[in-house]
Image (cartoon, rainbow, N blue to C red; front, top):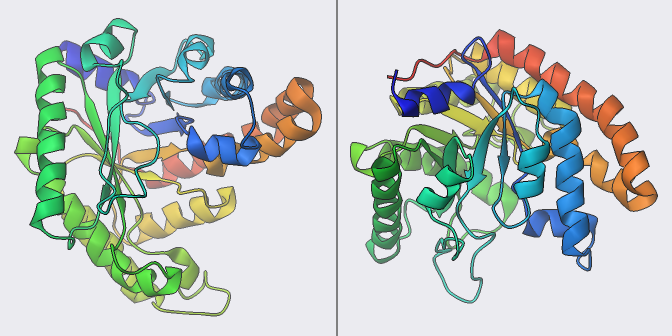
Amino acid sequence: MTTKQEKLNRLCDKNGIIGALAIDQRGALRRMLGEDTPVKQLEEFKVLVSKYLTRYASSILLDPELGWEAATARSENAGLLVAYEKTGYDKTVAGRFPDLVENVSVQRLKAQGADAVKVLLYVDIDEGKEVNDIKEAFIERIASECKAEDMPFFLELVSYDAKVTDEKEYAKLKPHKVIEAMKLYSQERFGVDVLKVEVPVNMKYVEGFAKDDILYNKEEAAAFYKEQSDATSLPFIFLSAGVSAQLFQDTLRFAKEAGSTFNGVLCGRATWAGATKAYQEGGEATTIKWLETVGKQNIVELNAVLQETATPVVFK
């Protein structure tokens, strides 16, 4: 077994399923805890989540700006993914272009104990060559860097439309955007080992999940999950996108029934979002209590659903 395969296996549970905890949020976490939250408190919050929840996770995703203490605090059974990109994007420039943390390299992440590198890319597959060609070259460069260091590369794809901002209108476009981006970045030139992707349908607009507006019946939605699964030969995992723990679990069951062969999740806010309120209201002690009760319940229940629904991954 190669070093790279060993690293990939460290990110999975004993059954070959990726049940990873994501807390690489920086901008989003600051918005949740309060824009004026000091860096030390952001780091401390990540340490608490890592310390109390990684005992139930196959691995944890952290960032190199606020996350190294949390990486050290993780359970010894948990693998480590580290984000390479800066948080957010420049809203003054069209295209949502990615950028990397300046004082970080794959070589440095490897030296500090990372088992994999994760990069987030915002993609509008229809935005035009002048934008998407730059993004493709960007990912090719990271692929070369990861290959040189024999480091696993997780690519996170988040779709959007450059012109449509209304949620319901975008929900009509989302299946096409998600699936076509997956097809493109599954090409060998991008060197991706695992894709981290959105579910192909906004479940808020699916029959049986929707409160009022229904855009898709269950059969139509299920067909998109199957099409997504068939669109790549790479292992792929779902991101939670900040939905509730219950909706995420129900979504995974729906994906399985639809014939999706997803290999796990990288789940962030759906597991730990409630801890931010606990931290604001009662500091460390209240947060620990929340993590040991509600947080634990969220992740244990998610793991049970994963064992029923996810397809074990075999890294070649």
